[in-house]
Length: 163
Length: 158
Image 1 (cartoon, rainbow over the protein chains, first blue to last red):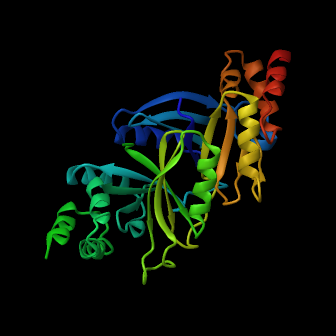
Image 2 (cartoon, rainbow over the protein chains, first blue to last red):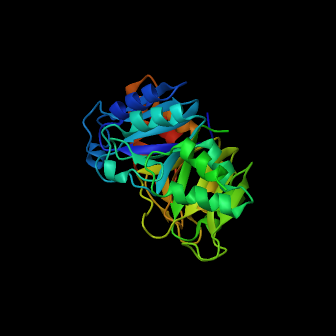
């Protein structure tokens, strides 16, 4: 078991969301599932048998999902970066996770999925480019980055190489 | 390299938060930090982004301004072996302005939510006997900080 695990709070659709995420990522699986019982109904208000928590793994990293009611909503204060090796990989995650999400939230490689969770779909090479000691290169890369929604590796390469 | 990295958006105190977290968790360090340049969107020299490790896991943080605040919709669940671990993390994370919440949850002084949970909770609540698992659940629902011996007592008496 991982020592620190990100826990996602859903209203009542944790099961659906976990099923979705585990089909998007490789090396994914669902672990233990716990359920609400009759005890504590006056506190949690969930019908007996409702899913309480789900352990799951995405790309061999452990996560938890919880059905907690409509009290808390996701926002951009916590997002998840997906580090991508290729444009194909960026396109894959952008399309799968972006489907049904709020398109207005798509900016600079960020998107919201249909559950409102924020993801950043980022090519690994972008970090290398932005850490380059040549300031004129990093500035050109930043300049093409800001207007983008889905990140485009080729555009970064061109901006980086341009003299 | 981790495929999926949690990214925490702070107003302007990411550096203080990272330093607190790496002082609390083992196997922790700052991997890389970048700072706002002169004429940038943040005060020159202020931390812009940093990647860091807690318990060998990679996280990132940003000083992004006051646009977004943490909510309990995403919390960090910490798996603890002993009551001493629970007590230590609980006390250090609520110190200097954090607050206790229910069922092992707390908010640290930066508003980030944590769950400090002993691994015995999952084991006891996963018992095949529904009377026992329900008794443990009922005991847990009344707690703020999780007390392992009280969970065990509820289990034994059910």
